[in-house]
Length: 129
Image (cartoon, rainbow, N blue to C red; front, side, top):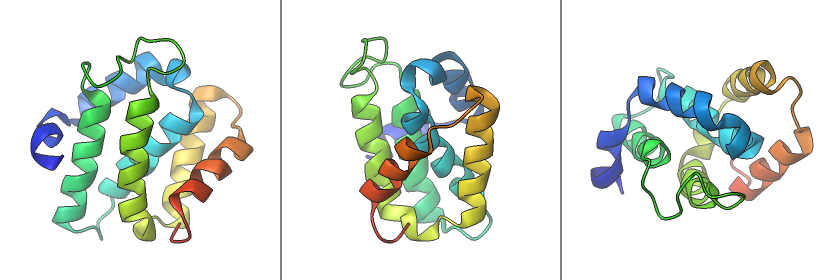
C-alpha cells in the first residue's frame, strides 16, 4: 500500500480534504485521520511507521478510491477500513496526548464530540490503544 498511496499524501491536501468532507465523513473517520496525523508528526516515530501512516492518509486524500467519497453513507467506509488497519498497526505508539489533540480538534470542528463513537473506534483497534 505504501508505494501506491504515500505519494498522494501532503499536509495541505489532508487539511483541504478534512475541511471539505469532515461533516460528511463523520467523527469516527475524522478522529482516525487526526490520530494518524498527530502520531506521524510526533518526534519519536520511526520512518517506517511514518511511511505507513502517509500511505493510509494518502488513500484518504485520493479522490478516486474503491468507493467514491461523494457516495451517500458508504462513501467513506473504504477509507475507514484503511485508516483502521493503519491504526491497528501503530496503536501502541498513540499516547494520551495524541488522543487529546485529536479530540480537541474534533471538538473545534464539530462543537461536541460523540465519545461513544470514539470509544467504539478505540475498541476496534484493540488492546494496544
